[in-house]
Image (cartoon, rainbow, N blue to C red; front, side, top):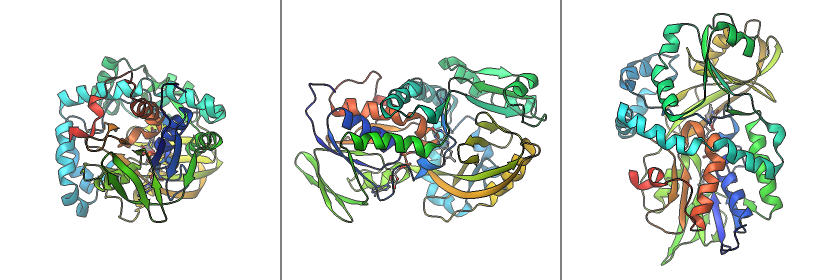
Length: 418
Ligand SMILES: Cc1cc2nc3c(=O)[nH]c(=O)nc-3n(C[C@H](O)[C@H](O)[C@H](O)COP(=O)(O)OP(=O)(O)OC[C@H]3O[C@@H](n4cnc5c(N)ncnc54)[C@H](O)[C@@H]3O)c2cc1C
């Protein structure tokens, strides 16, 4: 606790990993925090990810030459990035910004902004893990990407060059080295690279729940309500109005994942947030090789992650908005490829899951004070790395609420950039 900080009543909207980590930091600072979310903590998109605390995740989704993939994204059922035809007109403004952010010079710049956040992501989680006594959930096993040919690995050349320029630690591996790390993988994988500093959250919902349990122990509370609007007075937001009540507050943090732009719009600001939908299948393995860490099958852009409750197969991104029904056909096709990647795998599917990555066009999250209301803070738009950056986001928002200058320049994360 910082003795100079004046305790406030703070509402945090959204109880995903970002909202819960933020709530825990604020509560530890001595504030009185109410988390508002109709869904129990960690049961939104934070439930179903691949579990990587991706310290070296500095390469944005939009990369040079992306536009050449658009026809494949529209027509190829196995493309790692997929766009639903009917969603294209609605998503067009977001895509134009995405393509602008995909230029080589912008990617270089964006990677610096992502590195400033992600280089301390593991340390930030370690601090909360210590507080929440959640040590058994996160394993220091890194993140492995594998490819079946030199040509396929070469497609990541630019990404690896950018990572090297930022100072990300990774080791390029030959077939023997891959085999030593993951003996169960098919011998068809002959190339790859390993990021040893990444942590693996072996059951993502348990990490959110552990942070939430500590938050409650410190006096924080959760109300299962849905935010509908705000009551604004001369000093900013005075009340958060939900479907079931009204919550007076001194400050608000908006951490509502892929729905954050709807909530920001209630305060009169438009923000170009879309969603990269992602699926997973949970596999109850009957027979077959075991994995020691999450593995990206780079040729097809899916991940196999050995979670506590089964082997999790997670997909790349689908652009279809938050309201379209799930379409599990593509992830089931990937299941066949997963069986090729792990020869001998026999498994029953025990869960079909769809989540909504909250995605900005430049892959940079929005973390900062609202330009319109001085007692409103934003913490959303973490896209593919919300689990990674949750604890760091909570630290930064807590600094801003206390009027402390954060240890990094916050300009790149401001909402005003759009
Ligand atoms: C398949 C897949 C794999 C991924 N793998 C990784 C990975 O390995 N590493 C990584 O770092 N990230 C990964 N991610 C991304 C990560 O899961 C997300 O970035 C992260 O979960 C976002 O967290 P959040 O708290 O912002 O959102 P959420 O977890 O979605 O939480 C937002 C909450 O806001 C609530 N909410 C919405 N509207 C309202 C309202 N009106 N009132 C009150 N509450 C509201 C929702 O109910 C929800 O609970 C992956 C994502 C997917 C889909």
